Length: 335
Image (cartoon, rainbow, N blue to C red; front, side):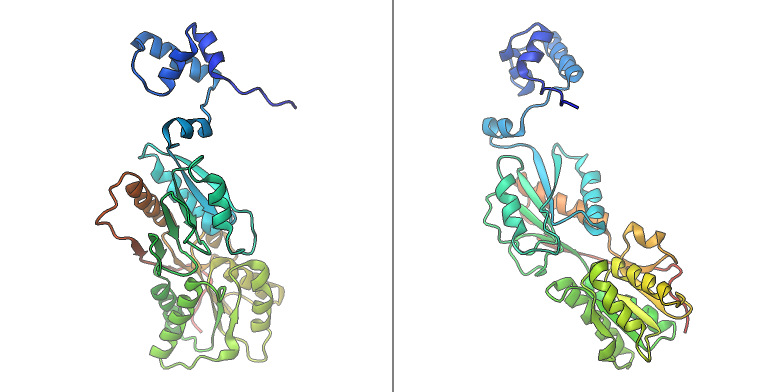
């Protein structure tokens, strides 16, 4: 099917019975057009579906009024953050562009490549979701959400309290009587994964329960990388009675592995995750997890970025850490 031709300013002018210069004044908010003509041109614009080019708009005004949300890929975590940004942007005069760097597995440097394509000509500022690097060398304002290296950067950051959240998850399993608790950790190069392991170890130490290092594995935050370690844990001669998986996708994979092995969750093994993405409530059984306020994280990042764009960022916190909370469902049970 052939695509419809793009509506041009000349098309609007012809349909409205005015000059191209008049349409340009209306589109760009300039004076010199009567109210009746202004309304007629707007009506034709709506009828024809005319849209100005972002590139042309940026050349005229040096800004596009568009904010970019850049992700490596659209997976549950980044999608929920994007929803938070999308909900909050309605209260601003900015539009939203969601862009995937398209590099599965977290290739280092995708942010630089993506910003090189978008900065200045298509977007005025960017929210980077789980960026591998934040020193991007771009001239536009940037806010990083859950960066790989944590908040040790001059770029404003937003993250959840990974350390306390992991402690809460582990303490919940301990309160149910579990002592042989496994950790299916995240990617070892990520600060969030390091903090979640630290929280796990701190909670075990506070309860005077030794960590069995045989029960500590890296799940990599992805189903395909978590499946092997989860299988190894659940087929040990003395398997764990509970598993703290460092994100929900790894936890759901663990429950799927248990089901294939004929093990009951939570009858044979309790499982707790981290994130509270929508998939966690739909899992079988519904997953007990630690909730990151993902929508709030997205909205907070937008607020920081808009403040920077409007020159009103002075005095605001540049590194925001939001609290986590326990969401109890059906995947954990007393030992």
